[in-house]
Length: 408
Image (cartoon, rainbow, N blue to C red; front, side, top):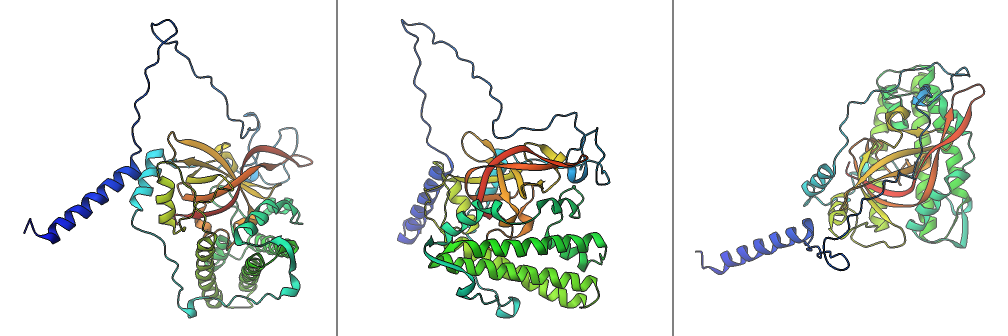
């Protein structure tokens, strides 16, 4: 039996598999060259110079915290009722945690399988006439994602309205899905309704911004998808408000919400598959993470890639979670990159990118979630300082998020 061809083939395949795992997980060891000082003797010893991170700066520690975990000035009266700073009982993942999570995910590639039709919402039809069709416009889904991400500051909306969003237990803003769930759980307060109205108006402004992007070919197809899902989000918000006002039943909202989540997740997975984006490094860790997230294996060289675990931003927990910058309407995350050596960095993700198809589900914005994607140039986190009168100031910067898959 031990000499049978079948047994020998199994042994050979197993050995090859083990060899491939060792090659991908453990980079080859290169012995350091022996250093020799001029004229012989011991080499000079150099002490590395410490340089503080230039990617972000924080407000003085003497500035107390106000609503949304945002600093407020002592010489001015806060325009909102002050709250206690959020408390976090978390463990920021180490490089070993990230690597282990990636390795544990091996053999679990994502596959975009269409759910049953009855579990999906029908996407609204978007006519060419409402788009800005131009042969010189963006022509691919990836180019569209970059254009949508980098142009978020052009969305015409009063960002200071975000200061009135309802907060979660960690003093971060409740996101639309969370607000809808609150309604399903029985919440009927004016604060919840007002937060839904703020998001609804923002989605209308987001739609107008999408229509302003010059598109052609696949870029136009992507634009239609974005606007369709934008309209579905507005419809979800309208149904949540109607439930609060007693115009529709909780059962109707429950059914629509379940189909909305399934549709959004499905369209997000298809969108990531269409992008064919892969970030990778010499150890192959990112490629394994990409396989776990179901991202097809094609290297994308135009932008630097990132992949790793989401952590607190440089400002720490005083900014709430998720850490939202009101004046610039973006989120400010930390990320641990599993590269040798480990690297900590900051990401800025516009609120406009949180919604499908670019990013979903909202639960991915948690500490420890693994993200893989691309980022470009640095953008500021501009925060509202609660004083009389309130004013905006830059509290940090981060690389602009353009597209990401997650481990959720």
